[in-house]
Image (cartoon, rainbow, N blue to C red; front, side, top):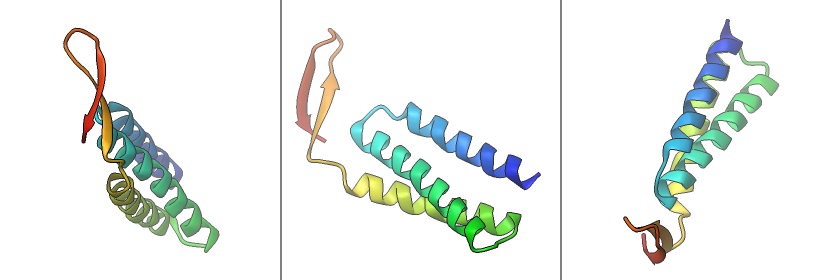
Length: 90
């Protein structure tokens, strides 16, 4: 039961990461996925119950999203309505 909850949470976060359209959103989404996975693994390794694993995944996901968004480079790539790609400040 708890494995399904953790897997569902990670899947939902992964879908949100894939939907990000800017570099900042993509980095935040990727950070959330990595953080949630790491948080769940650390909680499971320390012998936590299902609720502890879910809490670890939530805390790790939030921390990963914040770190991913904070480490975004200053320049982003954009595509205009005509399909041309250009770089500008994020």
